[in-house]
Image (cartoon, rainbow, N blue to C red; front, side):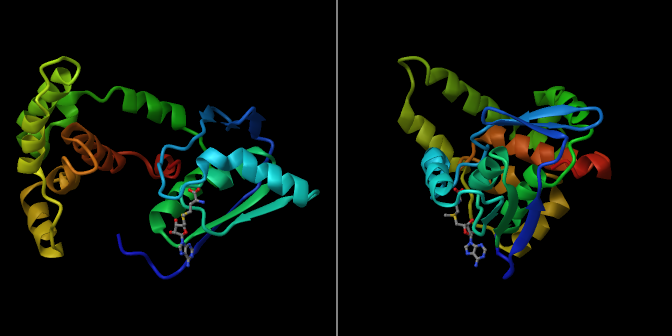
Length: 225
Ligand SMILES: C[S@@+](CC[C@H](N)C(=O)[O-])C[C@H]1O[C@@H](n2cnc3c(N)ncnc32)[C@H](O)[C@@H]1O
């Protein structure tokens, strides 16, 4: 992803709707309550998740009485999140738009409607993940499933699995290729370009499905994330 040459500034202050229990942050709105668990879902190169306690011990010892925490290179948001959970007013910043979106969801947005959304997400089944344009990848998913099942036994042939991955991998793709793909298929970007790279076939189908699904929810619900 190309980064935009500017930072995003996100502010959050704890208010009466947010309650800290241990290291989990419970956010309550008028109708919902949601527990955000640590560590955050994103694994990050150089992430500080494992040394959070040491970082905050050091800050607590050296910056007594400080109320504001500014995380200028927030990345996954793990430090900003922990600062929030420890009662600081947090300002987070990162040049990467995906990080800004993630941080905005954690720090700023109201969680009203999140439980309804979670219920909708729980209803997702394979037949919806592999519907429409994604159908053509279903056979590969079955193949992947077969390998994953075999991996639990003594009969797993990793060379055959490697071959399967090599045969499906496609990580290059120009903007023109992607425009052409969009004409032929809908909501298959991850399946077409990233299956068997960082993600497996089913994981890519889930990402594409969720991207499509996000178009169907109300603007109000979109703001949750
Ligand atoms: C090592 S990561 C931060 C990790 C983070 N503290 C964590 O534990 O997950 C460094 C971050 O700095 C951001 N960054 C680099 N240059 C930047 C700049 N000029 N302005 C804002 N953010 C920047 C990168 O996008 C990246 O997310």
